[in-house]
Length: 221
Image 1: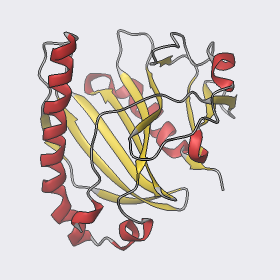
Image 2: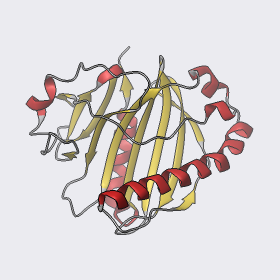
Image 3: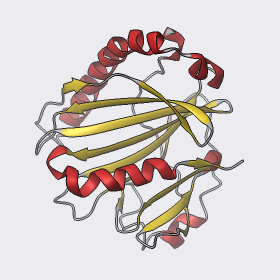
């Protein structure tokens, strides 16, 4: 089942969302390219080169670009935001890239397949951490090394009726350990990756919100 191991690359680009009403007023419903829908806290801060505002106040700036094309042959960041206040840490990032496997491959993966994949994925994540650290050092953004503290068994789940792989791990962070969850699934010819993370010491605050966002992930039929 090595074919299920998706390539982990650096994020490229940014496509702005359309904001919509959520049934919970603390969250905004985002409609992203490729029919991706997710709910995010309205006071979270959008991370983009040309938007420097909370999700709530950036709504008008986001509407017109929601239909931009996601080019083939590269990984594209559809959306990224971090928690507020900025002294805390939790984050969401949704990426899209060309799919290397079919959804049926994920659905067919057995428990034994997932157990075999776990150590291989751990090594891939270690390499990703090294690349992230190298990039940050080059940009002089951080002097704190990134490394994996603990890697958990890969899970298979259904997300809005689609088979998905969930990769969870604990990594180091500038102000303490960070819990990260990467949910990867195939939509048509694209792989969608939902990345959620939060500072472990703030679990009481962020774990329910991270869980809510994860459950809100939908795809336009």
